Image (cartoon, rainbow, N blue to C red):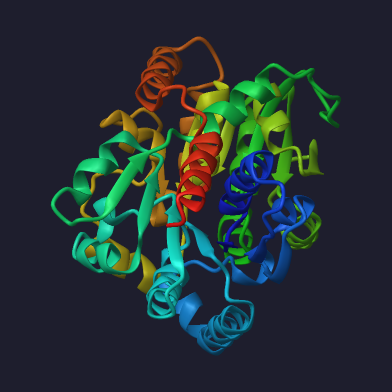
Length: 374
């Protein structure tokens, strides 16, 4: 198992759980986070060290990632696993897949790299190093037609997860007023450092406009929570009614009237929960320049990409100013045309994703092939 980021760790854990239900004797080890650890997966590395995004940021840790790749391959050579399940995280996982292929290890890839956005030239290479690809967006299947790679749309894991969550009882959270705004600054160190100060400043502006509003920051784990508190202590521009909760991001989203969300899986979660939100993102100047030169799609948010139109505002780099965040968020704080159009867009996105159980389908594919001796 290799899941190098928080969202991949969550989806990977669902797949592990589903495989164990069919094949209890299966043993898992590799790279992941708290969710995989909770499923009994032996971790060689934790996502806290692996979750780096951006050209400059990755280059700074090149030696670390090179060492991790060697560590994993050394373990592969010793343990000789029957198969590998690689989850998203293409910068590392595609290199690993090539090495696994040389060693005769069956390579399953769950949650495809977003080659439709930034590098379709990678498709033939993927077909050479992956045995079976399981995708979570229906439009991804046709991208690989004619490559010889077997591709299955297994459903989107968030749909089932969110439906289960919405059926649960709400829990008490430390809101400090009746009007509630969720702040989700990301799950990586550089996101907290680059994006959270602007989000806090935007929240202060919203507080001036809506005196009865309070804010909750959702962090994915205790390590990121510590970074959030450190950043808050350094920021002079921040709202008075502000608190931080750990491990309950979806509950924060559910209870909020609106949300400011850093680009990533959390934006799709917010949409499936039904909370109006704006998408924000900032990265290094070089990474932004490079991304602009290679990304071939008009949106970066999953909600907008799936819908094929702008459902949620996207404020990227210089556009992600505190004033712009506050202005766009304020438009979602009442029964406005913007809010109604967004909710209609959410409904269309949910329809397009369908209702398949992604984890169950991944387990069905892997276990069926294992029984056939493939």
